[in-house]
Length: 137
DNA sequence: GCCAACGTTGGC
DNA sequence: GCCAACGTTGGC
Image: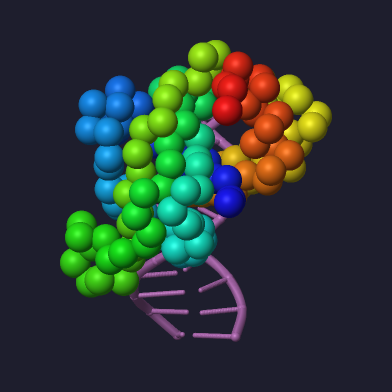
């Protein structure tokens, strides 16, 4: 199983909305690298839910429940989306500042490619971030 | 195929 | 509100 981090501006779509909806189609990705990452996701993969712009912190964990299929919000049919289910909130949200301050996380894709909205997270980084956030499982 | 102009993302 | 990074567009 692989790990990921997905970003959303809370003004557009927030973690609380994800929890309310339970299962949410992750649409609107219009970047080729991000699309490649979406297409590589498998059912059961987990992802951190990160609030960009406002908050700038990991606020929850989601799980892939449906693998890549054509994004219904893309008129040209060239883009894909996946379905995500809310698993639970981060007991202690991990801020971008905290991640940047940790030398073990210096090569996080989130930090190195700040504009990419869907990024992979290594097993080691996943474990490290879970410890920082007080996430057990 | 190169590159300037422009738009978008997202941190600060 | 500003700006850096980076993707896209379009003229040549």
